[in-house]
Image 1 (cartoon, rainbow, N blue to C red):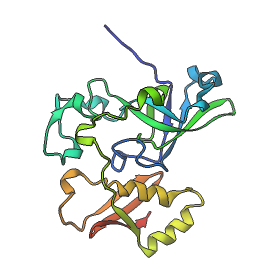
Image 2: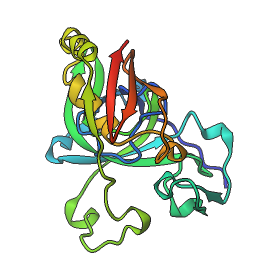
Image 3: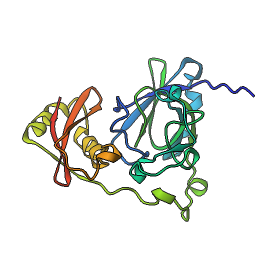
Length: 231
């Protein structure tokens, strides 16, 4: 059986590379994305009534890893990258059909200059990700209060985030163009996006995360993440 899918649009997000993207949706509340619909779906009727729902399911395509293949076992970062689990027992991006799904918060619908767009919040998608489908989140069916989450039963602990004097000065100049930039940086770095094998080790390494067209340079100082500069 051959199955083909046609993306309905793609999403623009602050995340320009995989490094720094939260490992689950909803963890970075200030990360917003805009879905721009392709010509075949550029009709406001496709979204009629969607404002009734506070949250939505996005089904999307892992376009940057789709050609890298997959294996039956992966090493989840949640387990420190030291234990293997079956691919279908994880949310790894390296999947047989490269399909992902995320629950996001509804933002707004716009139709300007004959272009349909949908803004959503709390995203964990790379900029330019193809969107395959959108479905409403239905609380009575989708929210299972007694569900067991295995290795991911609880959300990870957050790290504190501080800014150098230079970074604070840079923020003041940038926030007029990038609203809520400070909150976004705090939420992204609070997730401790370092590779699993870096955690627990002492290092003076300076990391860089691409948000929008900015390079956020930061370093571990004690038990916190310190933003050194915003380039």
